[in-house]
Figure 1 (cartoon, helix red, strand yellow):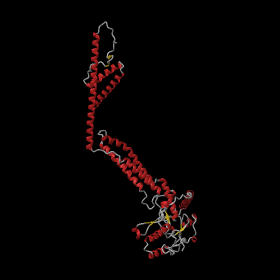
Figure 2 (cartoon, helix red, strand yellow; figure 1 turned 60 degrees about the vertical axis):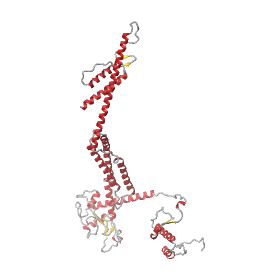
Figure 3 (spheres, one colour; figure 1 turned 60 degrees about the horizontal axis):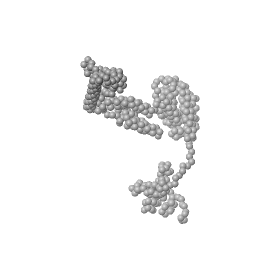
Figure 4 (cartoon, helix red, strand yellow; figure 1 turned 180 degrees about the vertical axis):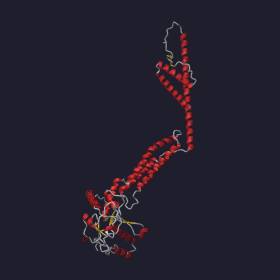
Length: 495
């Protein structure tokens, strides 16, 4: 055989025989060339990969270079053959074509078909009900004989000779397996494949006046002995599916989906928690500082209420995340993504709000904090009082010093010779040129309260400063007077 000859078929890589089929090739290689395990493993992997491609179960990301062995050779490890996929040349994206318009047209046509079929079924159902057809669970409708002929006149039936087999179970009709017509579309099926629509359900879906309760459709299957004994309207499964789908859509218009109801409940819990959280934080900070403005029991009650709201948020969000996952038909990918997003939002909300709530101290610690705060306030008040007393004493001493200086300057003036001209101008009471201004001391009031006496003295000083237009002194005296009056009012209110 020439080196450049290309053969095709199931060729043995060792003896180059064409064995016609894959099973014969594998059996031949296991019997004749069992010593070469690497080649045997490669053949098995090649056949397994081809089978997976045929069954459409191979992933598009798999590469031709990875070849897996059988279960007997798993312990020996995987053998990688071929070219490294990272060395392949880059392949450009080929020509693409959008099928969205075709899909939308097909979908619109399907919706139109469903609407037309549903409306036709509803119209025929109403005609059957209003015609007075006798059914056992319809006490509000009049009874009437000759039901089959009347139903055939309202809905065209397919001829019995045209249908030989039931289109649902694919079984042939005979003497034992009778033909039954759908009263809504006229199709033919066997008795076991037919269902019955109760008049109660029919009246409710058509929004007609019906005496009695509205029950679900009676889906009792089976062949009746006579059409007059049927407890409802016989129909096929396709018409029944249309009616149930229409009823479900009508109910969904009136009721909110479960995920929406749960989400609204979760948001209401969040809104209530957001109104309580600032109040609780303010109370907790005040209690931790030792203030007596808020009660510890009230703060603990609000905290328990907040934690209950956060627990409700957590439970509802978990219900939303697990909604429909255990059903036979799970929700769509977008619905699951939405539910997971709501759960992630609730988790972030709890981490930001619940885990950052300040803790409340115990009763003993609250008592200790209040004592420490009371002693701190008392110490601070004593320091401020001592500071004010020192400032007042300094002002009194300065006033006395200025008075002595004025008296000394007056004695010097009286001792000057009468012939010497007067260089110092006559100054008004309470002012001395070159030495600054000082108020003239006044006698203390008759009030026995020393605080009121100090207030009267400051008022007299303030009056003198205003007369002399000493604006800086006026501002300082007004501030001192205000502090004295506040302290006096605080002392009297505390008694």
